[in-house]
Image (cartoon, rainbow, N blue to C red; front, side):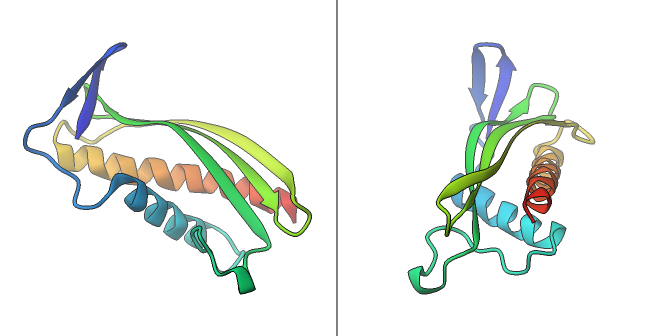
Length: 132
């Protein structure tokens, strides 16, 4: 775990580790949350089967996803919604989420990370709903 302790300072935990690759875990949780928060049906992660690709694609640029010194989580991301068949962007957005932790322990920060990703999924879903 990495914790931002100042504007230009981070601390790496010597004892707390992720159980999976952060990028893969983030993608998995976001995909699950998008599936739970929308009526779009099936949500798949890239790369997808080229024979049955999606109608729309969400491209995400994750700028910040970190624990703060007080245990809260900051998430900052930009996204674009693509109409795959037309090959054009049909929606875009930016999320700056700060999710408080219920306490200072790492487990509480991890729970805050999950809530932050769920909030991001709801914001992306709102963009997708406007595309319909």
